Image (tube, rainbow, N blue to C red; front, side):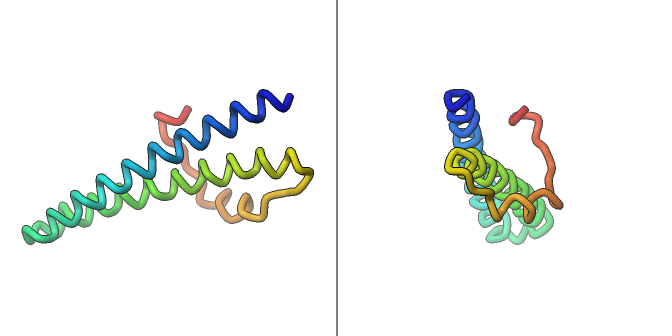
Length: 92
């Protein structure tokens, strides 16, 4: 069982890193569009970056839950993220 839990936690860490990189890329694009006075496109890129940031946080929290379950504790972050939960196709 511990081996399955570790794989799941590693899986979530991998996806958290991926979404973090995507968020950084979209934030960079948003800044470039804002400098060129293309505010609508900048806002759109910022929204995409925000979504990737939320997904990275969700995956990080899920990985933390696996580790806290191994120690017999519950994660305090799980209830905060459940209300705003959304899935991305790449993570399934």
